[in-house]
Image 1: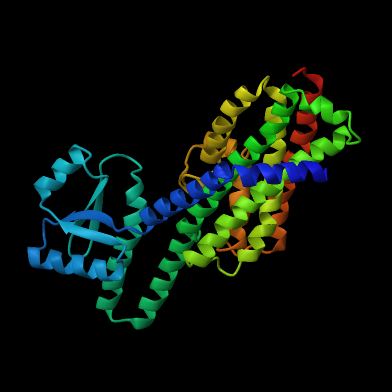
Image 2 (image 1 turned 90 degrees about the vertical axis):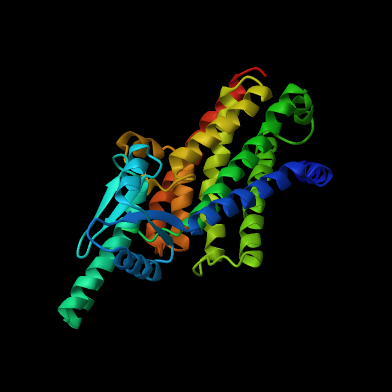
Length: 353
């Protein structure tokens, strides 16, 4: 086993391009997604009752209260044209004591982003006009509590970082396990069996290398963001190294399973990106599952190990989970790992490579 570890270490040192590529892609995509989450959202507004001066005043107040949004004033005709051509997803009609959000199509995502901001502004204005400070505090507290429940406290920057970190670690895991098939195709596997090394030791050593390599990749990425990008992990940075272990075990097992169902290393090279992307889409890597409304897609997401890995990483940081919250997703990932490992090794042993 030591010889196999030594050989892998020599190969990584001699050709570290794959590992560096996975780390670089993780950092790149995380930065891109984080910058898109922090950029201003442009929202067009118009009014049929208020004067231009009154509309500009409301727009200034809205921007002061919610700097994430950039409001631009247009006229009603232009608003109707943009909505008809779907140039914009939604446009807000501002009036003195009410508002209307006109959507270009049903379930436009931007509506759910801007509606709480507009509603809070009008609520503050109305309760302040009544002059009842106690009522102001009570209504604002109720509104903010409701908004927090709707958003479920998602830190989209960390969500992107965790999602792409797990996504690219899947590639590293899969392509490392690919070497087992290559060893069998080249006849090296059978020659190794003639040495004192047993078949169990060969499997365990190769799988441990895949596990350690993927773990190291995730650790490097998280450390880079903690040291150089000053990312806030909500005091759960070191806990992340514990919660990723069940996820890596499950992905390692799925790599074994994929190796058992393909007939060549070339097929596995094609299958790994397919399953990695599918699991990422189902597991919420590219978008939070909170915005998914399809019951079928949500049901299928339970098959993705990335879903549980993301949930646990979120729970260890901004989610504020306690120990009991980690038991169910960890148990599911461990079950996946045991099941896919047993099936995968059995398939690999039964087929002729």
